[in-house]
Image (tube, rainbow, N blue to C red):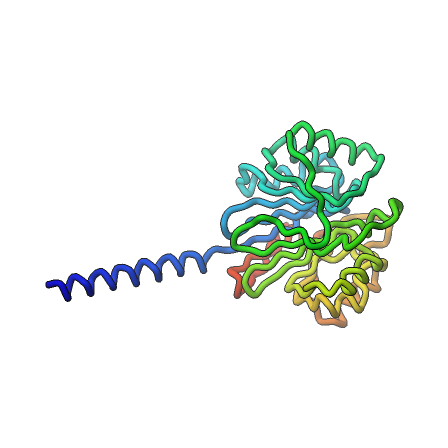
Length: 277
């Protein structure tokens, strides 16, 4: 009887461990590149359930808030403002009004625009302090590795794009690089700093402007997929230079102006891509 009982105990433990491992392995990371027109807004749901928002477009934030409501987001663990430009920071104040935000990260650079002032006031009302986003800062998340790889150093205040907080997110064998509006100077500094930049998915810098996504940076990242967050604009974004460069590198490229919201889902091994207009 003792032998039989012991066998049942071993079988039970084996089954429990297998079930737990299988459950953990089946949890997904989802990354939503939201179509907010000529701007950036990225929502991330980690395998353990944390909600992360990177930027919120340039309008009143309604596009982002509506999207988050549809995803049944209840609160936001981490908000990242990549840099003070209005097409990135502009909607964050409305998100802060709509949601409880636990942590806010931003590069240590100031701006005088009303959009940036509104963001700072909204953060103050929320009662949180802005943590500095810079090279080497790791987000305290479980189940994924999320590290800022830029800004590597300080730049002139006139170079707001190069101040962009660039986050590299890794889950299993899949990874993402969110570049904000980082331009050639920042890209060069990232490469010189010898950090890990390779990513399965690249959020193309500065909406596809020719001042970003250099050939050398693209070789360093080696993306399988790229997303250009862009809308109707007078800047010529995305430029044919960048579009052709991505095509030559055989990178599968999506555009929010043509494809709508882009959703990546991965279990750390496999990845699916969905376009939702």
